[in-house]
Image (tube, rainbow, N blue to C red; front, side, top):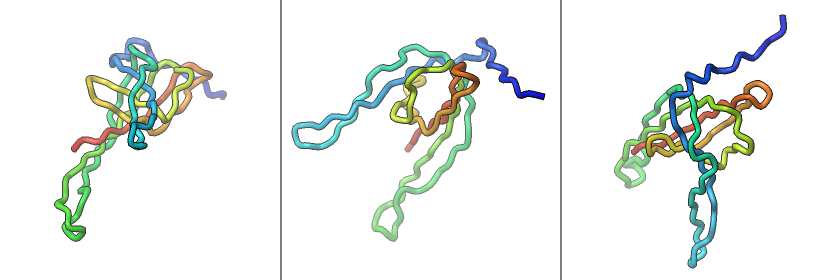
Length: 120
């Protein structure tokens, strides 16, 4: 029996997201600055929350007070977006998620995107 891809029901796309690309430039002092440029302004996606990890950024051994950092993983499923890459971010409700990995579902039908965010 052949595998057939069953696309997501469009009614399940309940999250309004923005996809923005990172634009790198140098300032007057030669330091690299990153700004965001709109790529997709209003896209709809399905969101599935993944694992959340917490760890300490510094240790007392290094002379730093440990600050707790949380990393949350999120998976979005959306219509196929030509040119989507790991150099972009997804913004939902003001929270910026870095794209970690992308996968094409079907033949340019949908994208499955794994993202992460850092919350201090």
